[in-house]
Length: 100
Length: 135
Image 1 (cartoon, rainbow over the protein chains, first blue to last red):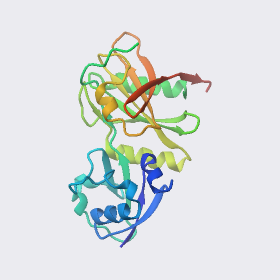
Image 2: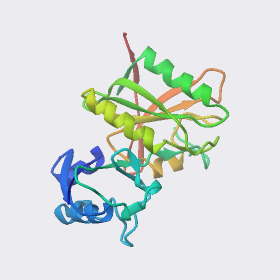
Image 3: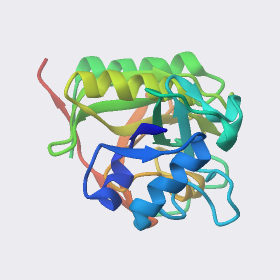
């Protein structure tokens, strides 16, 4: 199944600068695997070596975070759009280093 | 350099104050080439913590789409430090997702909020000027 994948700015350089790319798959996992087959630079950036979703990215099918669907097993249908965005987090845990 | 209007500056600080006692966070959209902020998107802190923040992923997606529709990009993130200075913590540095982004810290430690901005590239922190532009 052909699907469109929206890439975040931080990953576009691995895909020739493209904002959106075409991928193929019946599930989110298959689509992301086809994506890294096309663009090997994305390998390890979205799916970890153990086959799970990278901790620091969020993947969506249309409007929904796949972590609240079926993760990488989330099925895709024609015209679905997959979006990848960085997980944005941090905080003051730990003492800030001293600096000049 | 990060350039923002007084309105965006105030929106950011107000969101951080309203979020107390927890850290507050949000995204900044604008021109990635100039660092000119067009829109501030206050977001929910999913971590709901005084020491951690996580931008709500659904609100991030909505902000990203809205920014792109307006011809802009998400170019940075802001969050508050409720009891420490406006300087990135080791957690902030470790989790900084994009070297092209502006990382804005709003410190609420003192009576007057302090806003500072940084670039974080490969774990290295560089402060940049924050310029208030005319409306």
